[in-house]
Length: 175
Image (cartoon, rainbow, N blue to C red; front, side):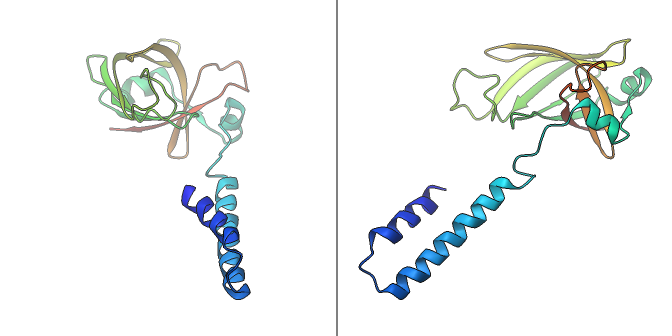
């Protein structure tokens, strides 16, 4: 991005160049700038977060207690947060886990310069059908439970079944 801006500024700084050179350079810079804007506006770059109502509309299937108790032990979990962070852990069969995050959202460290943070924790499946995780990061403790849904080949967790506007987070679950 910085090089694009620098290039754009340098085009107009050297206005003493012949008009043909300026026109070609300006066209090239404006084309690059337009492509950058289109990428920034694309749905992939700024996807709206899923909500429980979206999951239900997509005919998402809620995982039962039995489904979760079969799927979760030994599962490799990747959790994609709405703030852009990606977290990974393995649900050990003894209920423990060791997590890492790329820290794009600033969770788990005291400074934004830390790229990766680590946490220890536990996981469980409650009788009400929720998947629960406790994570001990350096700067905070997370305790949460999510009702899990499968939509296609993706999994989503929501904190509440009663609120259609409940925000979902995406999970990849692999054995």
